[in-house]
Image 1 (tube, helix red, strand yellow):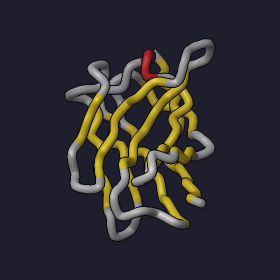
Image 2: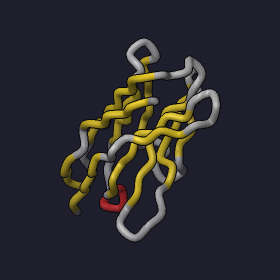
Image 3: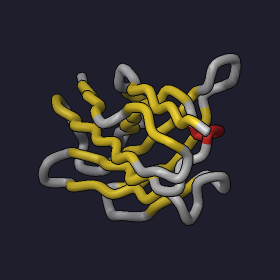
Image 4: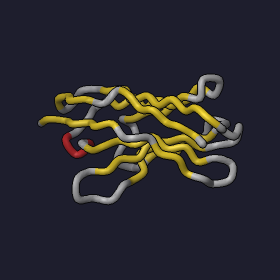
Length: 116
């Protein structure tokens, strides 16, 4: 089993910044993908950004140039630096880990609210 604990959400004005962090623990395969997804009320959960264990990144078009994902393999942590936040970024943000066997694990979610 893998446990994911997120932190760093909150309320920020449009144009501001937040940094989300996620710490993974448990049985973690060395080859994995960690990432962030978000879900706004009434909408489906969507990908924000992912990063592989060898550092390859993928971003949703809506956040490219504004968000940066990074990870520390030694600490099993993944971070999401969010700059230039917009009201449409308001959502619950979920940390995800997909292991070598394509099993998905999710954190409990952290709320990000961007006021206009």
